[in-house]
Amino acid sequence: MLLPVRTVGVMGDGRTYDQACALRAVTSIDGMTADYCPLEHAFLGGLAARIINECRDINRVTYDITSEPPGSLLIPATSLNHNPNAMGIRSRFNLESFGFSSQLDASP
Image 1 (spheres, helix red, strand yellow):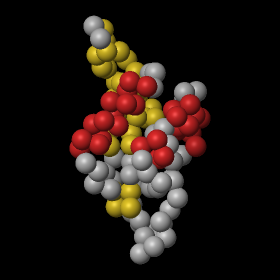
Image 2: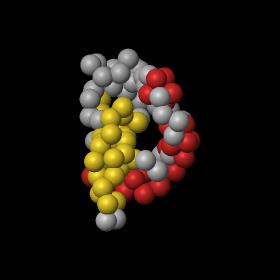
Image 3: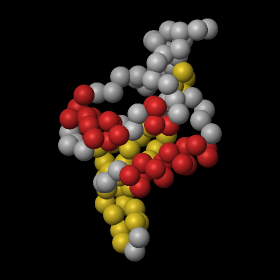
């Protein structure tokens, strides 16, 4: 999700004032509650590097470890609508591009 903040970063020899993006991976049995998924730091580091290198206007990637509740599994539509680049970023990065299945596993 693109966050509604700008962050200072360094790309090459200059400063950048670009957007931050938050990643959230959760596990849930009932769809009403969820716990964050403890992904490997090496995987998160590679993912962050890929997002920063391939997505213009993003210079920071965070990983949200909030459980639900209090966090929500829903992404507000305003987070996608306030930035014209959001739809392009969302369509470029999907679960399959990182080796995950987009299908929910219903097995216990």
